[in-house]
Image 1 (cartoon, rainbow, N blue to C red):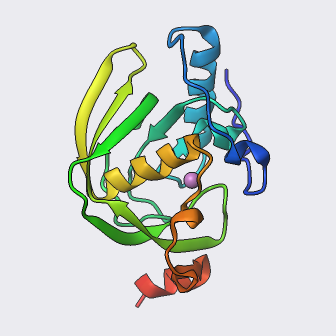
Image 2 (tube, protein in one colour):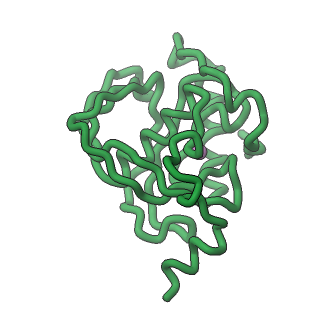
Length: 175
Ligand code: NI
């Protein structure tokens, strides 16, 4: 059985490091990281998680968009483990929308992201997958991908006035 991990909080050095690529998808170590990441994400209201958030500086993310109290309007998808992910924008167009992060509790901010991207990753069966993502799921992917590069969403905020306390953010949608 795997245990739920603590979530590394902003200020922890691992969140600012570049994560290492995975060389052996089927190794016990990789499988254990994926299991811990999965059960940890499932224990939260988050829609994605990256290995550095459980203090493991490796290139593994999970994208798991689902409606929740944190993201009431999120589309539903199967939680997808992505190893060594990368992406290319399919257009230069970006939009600002709200993001939060399990490593930065209590805060939300408007973040510009590409709206249409093509992602490439290795799946849990060591197959290379390429597919287009758009909208909210593309946003979640870019947020988690940034964690592998030592970047957090606040780094991409264009104006400090776009940063809200989570309590005020919820008031925007509760009228
Ligand atoms: Ni995050």
